[in-house]
Amino acid sequence: MSRNVNPFEVAQAQFDKVAAILELDTPTRELLRTPQREYSFAIPVRMDDGKVRIFRGFRVQHNDARGPAKGGIRFHPHETLDTVRALAMWMTWKTAVVDIPLGGGKGGVICDPHHLSQREQEAICRGWVRQLARNVGPVQDVPAPDVMTSGQHMLWMLDEYEAIHGGHYPGFITGKPVGLGGSQGRTEATGYGVVFTIREALKLLDLRPENTRASVQGFGNVAQYAIRLYRQIGGTVVCVSSWDQGDQTSYSFRKSTGVDPDELVAITDRFGGIDKAKARDLGYEVLPGDAWLEQPVEILMPSAIENQVREDNVGKIHSAVRLIAEGANGPTTPAADAEIDKRGIFLVPDFLANAGGVTCSYFEQVQSNMNMYWVKDEVLGRLDATMTAAFHAVADVAKRRRLPMRDAAYVISISRVAQACHERGWV
Image 1 (cartoon, one colour):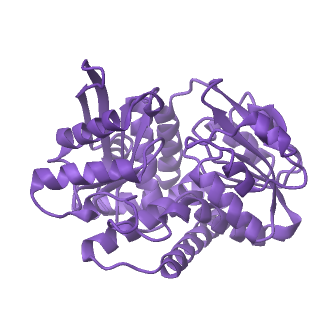
Image 2 (image 1 turned 45 degrees about the horizontal axis):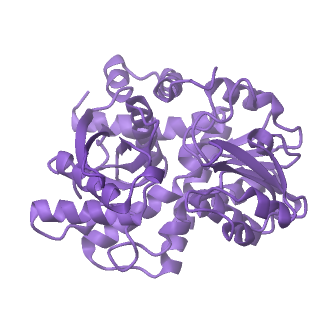
């Protein structure tokens, strides 16, 4: 499969495989393999130079049988409707596998925040909400930050939503700053969730964290917090990769004695790009972007974007690798998945490994709706308990039914969503 693989076709192929295992009836398959609702719209924005520019926005609600749709909004110059469809479908399975009462959605705008002023970004946010104000909300569809969006973007969207509806609705959107309806622990949640699943997987593999090394793709929020917690439990990260906006390419940064996330954060821009010259001064080797995949480590954490482990590069994975934990959404194509399974590498699939983010978003939504907030230790304790229970539920099904972890996770999540659709009388 090429780099240009369609993510929605990947998501559907993954679903079809498990639908056959579960022997789902035809109407249920037809309902679940395509989104329930899709919105595609124009967002006119008067730019700082006085000219009007039209941006394209999307929102896809894949399924809401188990609760309001939930999913991020990403700003990306190469955003496509099929990418949003795939991510919305994965969100449905993600909320189901950790058993929180939400469905799956996703949104996006085709734009590049690198080249937009704060005022222009605010106009896009408010324009996105104006197009969807009747179709999203605390009991319909709850957005959140994603690639190249932040708590500030969410606040602009919340403000616009509340202005339109004439009230306070902090549960409309998550990823808000703490103090304005945000939850303690949300910043760490996705990266920490990845490491909670790694910790449990290492127990099954009879490996002690202090005897393992890891290589991480990406150096955004997920990767940074995953690295921090993994180091806290005793592991050593020897390589990270990051995207260089100037060169429009990625680089890997290796230090055999161990990566220090704090020293790298100090030389990283707000989009996760690491300064190459300063990294060399700190003793890092600067390598090609794919080098993170080839390291002689026990653990790989692809934590950037989709379709990064493919049929054409899966063979570069070192023989030392015992575990892959997918911090990103859809980083592994089906053809690469088959090779990973064949090699006996234990894989924690994306919609389980990175479900810490949506789990904490759910906690934020609950806190916002009841207007009462928990302390950080309570949030992270609840997160650990939820992720640990979900991991062992999937591992038990994988063992009992002799399935790869991804298929076992899909068996659980698709079964739950299908059951909700049947019980509602939809199919």
